[in-house]
Image 1 (cartoon, rainbow, N blue to C red):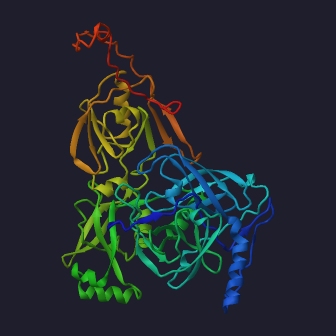
Image 2: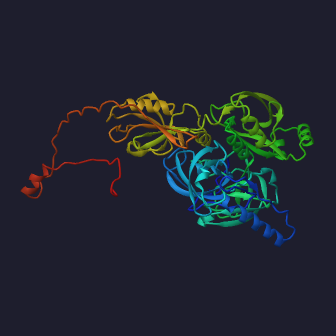
Image 3: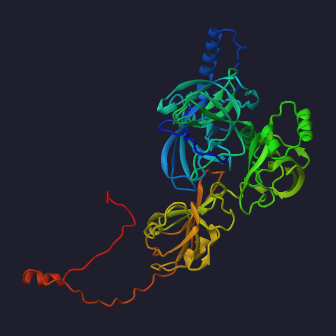
Amino acid sequence: GGGANWGYVAGIGAVSGFVGGAMCYSMVGNKTPRLSPVPPPATNANEQTAQWKQVLDRCIPAIVTIRMTTTRAFDTESPGTSQATGFIVDRERGIILTNRHVVGSGPVVANAILHNHEEVELKAIYRDPVHDFGFFQFDPSQVRHLKIDAIPLKPENAHIGLDVRVVGNDAGEKLSILTGTLARLDRPAPRYGNMSYNDFNTFYYQAASSTSGGSSGSPVLDRSGAAVALNAAGRRGAASSFYLPLNRVKRALTLIQKGEEVKRGSLQTTFAYKPFDELRRLGLTSNLEENLRRTFKKIEGMLVVHSTVRGGPGYQKLKAGDILHSIKDEILTDFVDLEALLDSNVGKPVTAKVIRDQQVVDVLLTVDDLHAITPNALLEAGGGVLNNLSYHQARNHDLPLTNSGVYVAKPGYIMSQAGITSGTIIRSIDGKPTPNLDEFGRILNQLPHGHRAALRISHVLHPKQEAIVMPSIDHRWFRIVKRVRNDVSGEWDPTPYPSHPPMMSPEPIQVGTAMFDPGKNAAEKAVSQCLVGVGFTMPFLIDGL
């Protein structure tokens, strides 16, 4: 995380996806699954071409085009329709791997188009709270005319110089096969912008494969037919493509297959990987560097604290520039080891050793639950959509995550009339604090129809600039409904709020006397006394209006 936005683009487009050859598990009906053999490594160009052709021919049926409709604004996402790619990683359970920004953090309706143009409905069963991957699921029994294949995940196969293929619907083409060579395995995660989802606390791979819009969720395949990474983004105006490593993806898939919870831990802290030359400037002693190099032969750097979220476990305990040495006496030199330790200690206190000003400092921290600080509910009110402030937005804008107010994902009819925009945080209603979604809904539902409520607001881009706005509450056209994500059904289960109070009785209006110009003639003078001004708003657009 951090750094300038260099024009990265996530690979969602008119048609997304890469179809890739891979070692495939084939199954027809209820026949015993079989593992297709993989030929030995080729020794010349012709043999390499033939080998790639065999792998691709075998495993193209494992790649699907995903058509999804985001039905509600939620957090950083807007409603809309797009296409992307995914690939089957478990044929028996019908599990498809793709990007988090494809599965989405909010409500989504999706289906998969298989290689033979059969279509199956998808349900979202997991989206990682931080990293750019998620899983859809379909019913394998609904596929009647195609062998269902699965591509294995082998993150250990990735290395610099590896020849890869990224196959799918790049830039709207139904099938594209892009070549590349892994050039970096330690690239910082791409940053998409302050109002967007951003991955962090992970390395990305880099290759010049020229992926573009529509390539999200494509497998990055090696010559053995295994997926070594997941295509995620590219840089505009350049051939650089960025792939997510599969270490944490494989762990999540294994737990889902076992029916177990995918625990995710966090210190609400962003780390950056720094080489030893920079670590020395931050206080790393030569003796400690020598010991680390002796213990870890291929080590080139360590993790450094970049920033912490206000009010989080690391806030005011960890400082920017602290070099992370170990947690629970386990030396940590990369993101994978750090996240493995945090994921296995959710809710537990841990002692971290950091190097600060050439001294080793012990810091007691409690590992937070990433799922608990990731919004999984929304509130529909006044034609708008609201949710709790997310970890990503708190991190993007240096805001406290808890009790900060309710985030406006879409203002809708009532709030837009008062000048409220997306990204606004509502802190109170009529002087009553609204620290979270439940409290906001409870207070809002108690207000009568037509009431002019005083909302204290700010915006995530300018959190210290507060304002008071007074929208008119409308219960006639808009009922308050809370929706909670259900990862079993893939739905967002609705819970309507109890009936709102009776409408306010209209107060008598004192009619005044308006003064008009006398007009040019008697007719104009007589008509002028009959004219009135009419102000109106429309809660819904009907017939093009």
